[in-house]
Picture 1 (cartoon, rainbow, N blue to C red):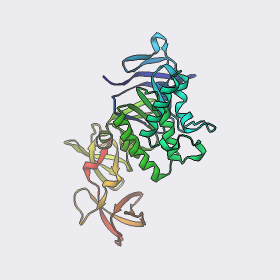
Picture 2: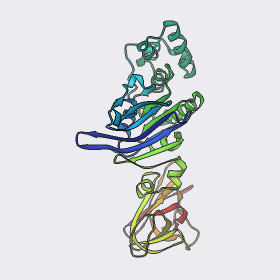
Picture 3: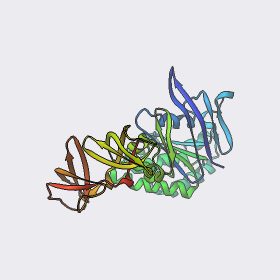
Picture 4: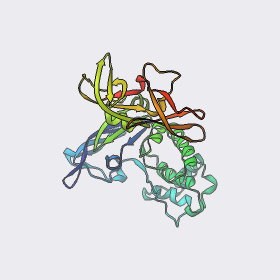
Length: 351
C-alpha cells in the first residue's frame, strides 16, 4: 500500500479554482516530483498535503490514516499528519544551534530529553552534521544549512517527507551533489518523499515518478523516462526537455507517424494524437537528438549555419532555413556554411 495517497484534490482561492482534481501516490523509499510552470499549482498541492492549505474536496491518506476528507469535513492540522516539511528558505532559527534546530520538532511533541539527544545525535550523524551540532546557522555553508533543515524534519521520524524546492538556494555544483545525496538518503531511510521543483533536470534526476501539473490539472504522471520518451500531450512533450517547436499542415499520416509542412521545412514524427492530411499540426523535436548528417536523405533537411558557440564539453550551432532555426550540438567545431541536419522521426512528436 502506498505511504501517501492523494485523491481528487480541489482547492479554491476565492472564486479561482487552483487545483482541479489532482491525484497521485508515493510508496516508501520513493520520490515523487511535482513539476510544472509558475502558477500550475505544484506548491499549492504540496502545501495542501502538508495541511497548510485547505481543500474543499478530495482525500489524503498517510500510512493508511485518512488526514483529509473534504466531503466529510475532516482536515487534520499539519502537526497531526505525520509529515516532515523542508521549506525553500530552510526556516532555521538563527539564534539556535544545529542541535536546538534539529530538536525543535521533538520538543514540541514533548519527547523526553534523553530521547531527544539520542534522536538528534543519530540523525545528525546520518547527515554528516555530528561535528556541527554546537554551531549556529550563520556559521554553516548553504549545503550544511539544507542538511540541518532535512535533519529537523527526519528527527521525529515522519512517514512522508515534503520538500519545497530544497535545492534552489545552492550553487550549481553543490546542487548536483545535494541531489544525489538526497535521493540516496530517502531510499536508504525508506521514506516516501514529495519534492516541488521548477527545475526539470532536477525532477528527471531525483524522482521515481513525476507529477506534471498545468493549470491545476495533472497533465501526465509517470516515470521520468515515460514523460521524456512517451509524452501523451503537446504540453508534456514541449515542457519536458530542450525542444524545438514547429507548426504547419499535416501532409501525410499513417502507421503511427505524420509529416507536417512547416512553411518549407518538412518534419516527420510520431503521432501524439490521430492526425489526417490537411489538419494543423505541431511538431516537438528533442534538441539533443538533432545532428549533422553525412548526406541528404530521409529525415534530413539542408540548412544554413548562422552561428556557433563553444559550451565546454560541446559546441552548439544555430542552423536556419527561412523563418525556422534549429540548434544542433556537436562534439567539435563545424566550419560548413550549409549542412544537412538530421531530425530523427523517433525523437519527434506531432500533435
